[in-house]
Image (tube, rainbow, N blue to C red):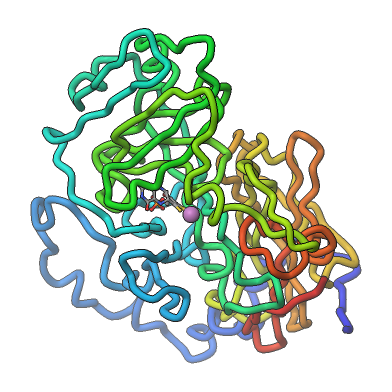
Length: 424
Ligand SMILES: Nc1nc2c(c(=O)[nH]1)N[C@H]1C(S)=C(S)[C@@H](COP(=O)(O)O)O[C@H]1N2
Ligand SMILES: [Mo]
């Protein structure tokens, strides 16, 4: 593969100034008006200025403007037999910043999204406790509250890519993730209210939906940072994310974040439910399966340019951007490679990494039509470095599904289009 580099980068500001002052054609498209004479968008009166717009209250609860109608969740029909027990993907290629709006945050249901009124909500804590308790929604609202931002990643995210490049778009390869600001009550507070007996080493958490999606969680984690959440990004949880209440398990696989949570049983041993034996275990190279792989390891992806977000603006300044996250703590550094991992440049983190939350990175660069094999590589505060696919395969073989946190490659071609390829 041949990759050309700009040896000495001209200053970005100088470049932009130069474009405005002189040549029209340098940034293809942007300068076209200069060449063709007056720009009617500037010199002519426009429809939108000749009358009035919508009054307030036109949409009491707003939706995105029609021009953004493409920024939606999407599923991959052949992945599952029906949409009741299925998954769709967040449009990460089209978002910026770190917060995922609930309206386009991916959904994963085992038996469909249920409609549960707050009035009908009950949360039971029973088992190895001093006092078994049942909480209504109103009860929960009266406990001291916490407010924190975390990513949720399904363990199956990127799970189709083990054997080779498969799905053409960051939405599909990496979109089983969302990042929201949760408000709720610390699970510890509720467990302390019930009084955990010394023999209580696990909690078993169930949802109210038909699947129940029951999962065992070690008591240390339950007492550490889990949240019984009722608001996300400031508003009530959407039905598809567990309205009225879901469990938040920071940094751990999405399957444990039980939605429509109804019961938490304190137990001496783990239940070993379907969701933690036949599913959500990791097949290894030798055919055995690894259990209890709860933490989501550090991972990142370039969201743009990417197959669904090609370069359309021609040569010159280019913003490469993406997301990084780690279930073990904060992201400390992200490197970007344009040559399939031979050389790396350190990207700029938009904000300091927050523990177990998405981090946005940018690489402000130049692109003059050279092909790129774009990769990103995340590092977290434990010193862990995101591995290549081959490094993972040595341990995991090719029959794994879950916990694929390998480095992703987008092949960006001379015309700016991008494709999912494998460079291992
Ligand atoms: N009650 C219940 N909780 C559930 C599930 C479910 O089907 N039922 N799916 C789990 C899985 S596998 C994932 S990845 C996350 C998805 O959360 P989301 O739909 O809010 O994205 O919820 C988890 N919690
Ligand atoms: Mo999941």
